[in-house]
Image (cartoon, rainbow, N blue to C red; front, side, top):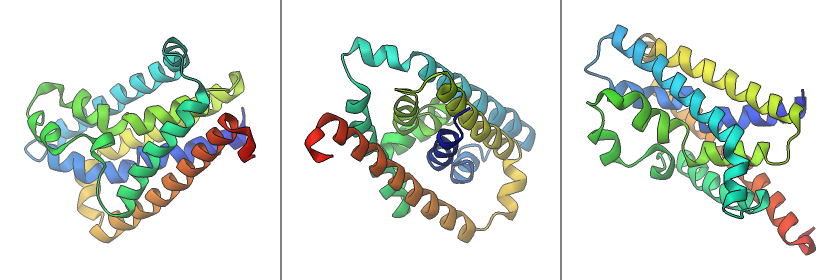
Length: 209
């Protein structure tokens, strides 16, 4: 397994799918549910997210080929999207591009499909996560795919645990800790976005190298 890629992917996935950033959103959208219902819903969210991530990882490159888009094109576009999301986190606001609009969140909160939409998509596996997966796996060999898959699986496992015990964790997690986590993950995500964009631009415009 490519250890360097695993560490890079782990940092990127934890920043974009941060379970502790999702926690207050999840609690707010499931306030009328019992702890047992929240636990079942949290596990369903993680399961749907894992399926979506696996589909993107296995079929994403073929989709890019179908539309005639190179990995480097997607690096630049994905880097810009991630940078916007990271800036939003640094400013303490969620990006509608990744988490959905307020109307999307409120309009589906009472539906049985809540676990899939809008929680799994687009709040967890949204444009930012999809861009990250496609860029990291674009030119990766079998070991690279294993590294990216392992990183995504680890973050999703943590997400499942956090959402499954959301009620208990929410009672002990202070607002200050949540704000610090959001700001830190926003900075990490912005740095990953810059690396993605610069790498893509160097490949598309060799003169920049």
